[in-house]
Length: 532
Image (cartoon, rainbow, N blue to C red):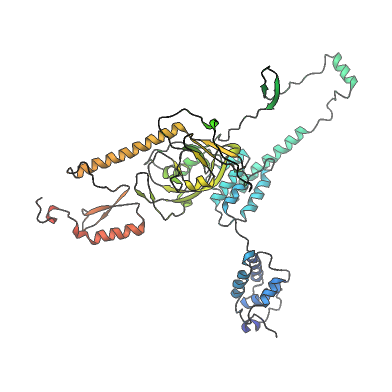
């Protein structure tokens, strides 16, 4: 017996009498090794054989460079099938198919003229190539790409659908679509018993004698744009196509001001939600991006006394959200908790965010988590859609969302703060443009200043109540949500700590304070030498 990679313990095992050798399986090093291993192990599980037989049978499935690699393994180096699995995947690791990111589903949209049945098949095929795809993301991206308005509106009545539920609901809409297509095709077919006026002179004469052929009412002609020169002559005509209202039926989140309102139930969200998913265009070509410039035509408002911030409206998830502050000074996107709840999102959709955030009141805030949502700016063909991450915070501000530098750079946006215009490269490669909401920007700016002023006034009153000796130099006071904890041996001996501090910082701080509880003066008797 020649040199072999197998250990003696494997060579001594006999093959089962009725063992079906996998000679129909071939791997030559050009396919995905993980898929080959999965198929091979499924075959061996069907045969019900042990580890040694799997080792003996595996080389039968190899061919070309793969079998040459196996024969070059050191003699006696294979003592178990796990040795083959490890070295096999390491050798052909470059052939392992890379799983796609869920963001690729945003590009799977239904083409004009494509049936819903074909679109669902194509969407399902794309889902099979994505690793870690959740039902929430799949249903959101599917709703995004649908052109069937009735089907899309039905899907927006529920935040999360499984693909099985979607397939079940889709049958009704697919049947209606196919019936409508057949009926429309029958209407387009010519009627062969209809009299032909241009080919039958005798019938035309009869119609003239009877008073002439009946004239069917003509459809109203489409309106044209006519350009006139100085002499009043018409130069050319063009059909005018009325712009579609893409935001019809969309939930618009305008102002969220209630801080302690009771959360809505799931049934209330289902009843109130009338949403339209983001329209995403195919991936942009690799051509050079067009030049972005600003001119006199971008000046759309009169001069204002203040310098208002850039506040826009954009689609986030499946809803239209107003009061979005475009802030180039923020590196993160911030979504405030009230907006998160109005969007119908759940805590289960959140991912952990380790780092804290300094709030608009300059105090530390621990985020509830982070969530990725499809986000688009612009309208119609000048729209740009991306997946954006939002840090969810519990804070009271005049804005619903703060759009940071990461997303601004992702959409390749250029902002003219004087004109309150933001331009970007749209999905189709053209230049998209969005104007800031001037009235809302001024209102938000004034509201933000008012919130800061009230916070300072409240802090000042609190300090005066504590110590009247200091009027012009108040001591710093803790801000944010305070948590009470006991320090001494009774409930009356307590102090406070910021609830939003990270756990690894808050716990040692609390323990240190409790360990030094004897340093606190709880009553005048704890301060000897001082009169009460």
